[in-house]
Image (cartoon, rainbow, N blue to C red; front, top):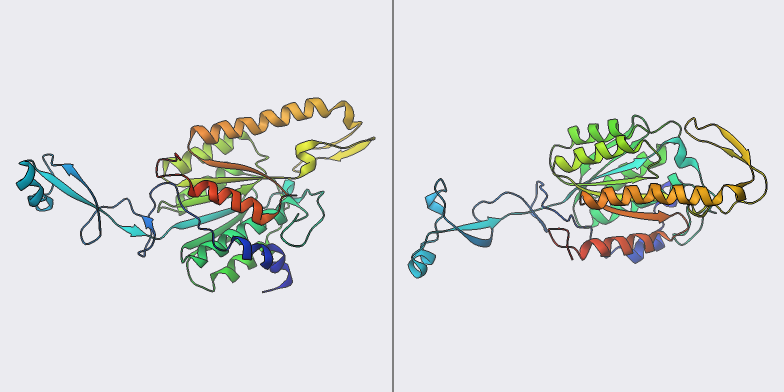
Length: 311
């Protein structure tokens, strides 16, 4: 493991979150027997429940013991257990270059939003591979930069870390095109984790999210933001350089702060509401927050949810 990749996967932070389990809230499908539920019912797997027989059901699945006791026909249903398939999407667009936090030790602030996003992806990949689940990775801007296929092999972490190190935040974001491509390539239902600042056209973003959910994927959104973007605590005449072709502005930020914070909160609330209405897990994470604390809170939140998304 190179020095750069260790920056994305701090060992002391991983030691504190290594016991957490990443769980999909909905049914998922995979190749191997494991701890996660498949949407397919069949024979020689775990019994789940009875349901009343309806015309067209396979009569060979009738529970005759239940019939002898109730004088009614019931079908025995089973549920296969399979591994989780997770696809990590890491935003490597130009706006992810921004960062005012000082890179820290012990899993603290990561510097830029891109570095922090890579740390989240690396930590999730580590956790998933520890529990023998399959994980893959895309890094993207307006096109796919790096692509790592889904695997649960022990040495797969190296491929993911290598792709993260090689990603370069340089161009604009093309959110819908990326999500549509991922939806087409990931035909098996699974967990899609998007790590981004989501500074993109909202209609394009929402259209892409809606497509992923319509294909049956469970979706997580990690909204990574710098503290300066959240609080806008600049002072004195400041030159703001817009990323992703946003231009420049020289001004006294005190006069803009109230309007900026109102617009920024509306931006966050719009995404929160959309995620909630489409049963998408969403969390805002400032880059000043320790990596293990962010993941521990979020993953424990997911583990407290049942199959319907309710606690």
